[in-house]
Image (cartoon, rainbow, N blue to C red; front, side, top):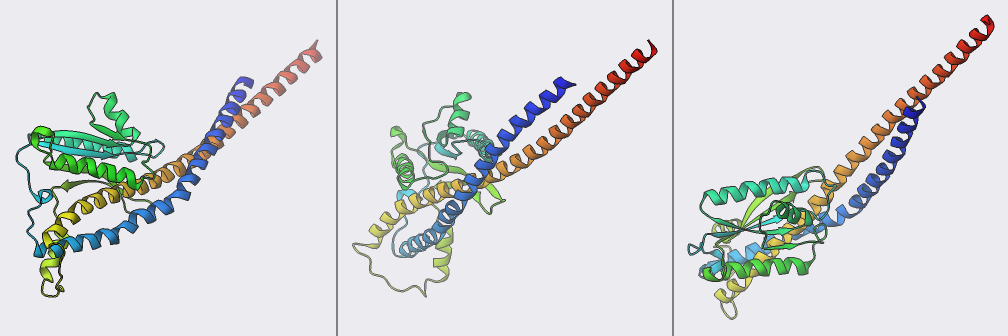
Amino acid sequence: MAGAQRIYKQKIRATKTLEKVFRAMELIAASRIGKARDRALGQDPYTQALTKSIATVAIHAHADHPLVKERTDTNKAIVFVVTSDRGMAGAYSSSVLREAERLVNDLKEQGKEPVLYVSGRRGASYFRFRDIPVVRAWTGESDKPSDETSSEIAEEFLTRFLADAEDGGVAELYMIFTKFVSMVTQNVEVRRMLPLQVVDGEAEADTSVEDEPLYEYEPSAQKVFDELLPMYVGQRIHSVMLMSAASELAARQQAMHSATENAGDLIDRYTRLANNARQAEITTEITEIISGADSLGKS
């Protein structure tokens, strides 16, 4: 019995240490989620204004930019998977990777050739372990993406989409990420970024063409349109990265909160078992003393 009591006390000490770690990680995520959420949701007004600007210019320009044209000279499609650098975030990364596998299989069934790009160490190690080639991986900034990294990613994708087929050009760009809805809800989404389809802006522009003011574009509406489209692509990619960062921190906070509560329940259980073992040990000792006293009295 003494051995069982000692084992339970060791388990209690180890679980208390883990509980402190989980609690600390929960507090760190909670302290950062507010700023990450504001950054993610704060991009929406800018994106909407940029979309409306593109739709307005498109009225006066010919929408024949390469970024809005369907390509038929190549069957390659970029699949950009946004995961986390660290674990302890529940099913955040695994949900994205599961959706990435489904998309890759669907593209192959359609006769297309997926080209993988990854953000986050979890995704990079996942594909490396399965010997699935990844063209490039960005790591170290999954929970706080910088403007420089987002611009680098956008430039890489734009270059490949505009390149010739023999130079590695691609026909489509898909992004798989986690959209931040609320602190308790984050949804995995698959979004086709290229070729562009500015549906909302164009619909709004079509219904209010008569109400649109007249603009003079310098040097021309087509030039302005051609300059706005790459900015729009870069902004959408940056918005996706910020949305994923907020989702990662929210998922980590929830996971660590649950882990802290489970550790507390486990400590209570081990404490109860240790007390039972101690009571059993005391009962055994008392029984042995009484038996020895009876033996001495009879002798």
